[in-house]
Image 1: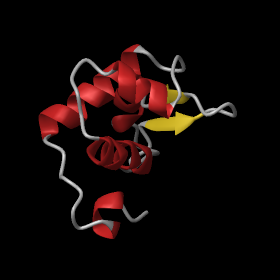
Image 2: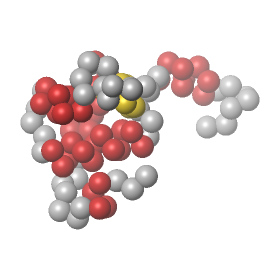
Image 3: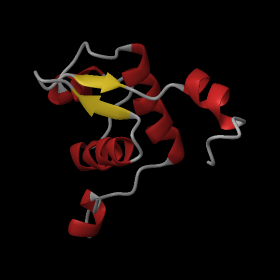
Length: 92
């Protein structure tokens, strides 16, 4: 998946702090907001283009998905990852 930034050279690169803030907000509010609503409810202001890059990134690494009504859902499950990480049947 090609991220928005590579399509738009003028888009700003998000800082790690900003990516983590957006990810944490989505995790805490999973399934409550659509993309635009989520953008407006963030604890700190973020430029729309930067937000788009973060959302595309989180989707590309399978941490978020959109339900059939376009609500943003956090799908990453660290407990499950830790459970299967050391399984001999699975190579990560």
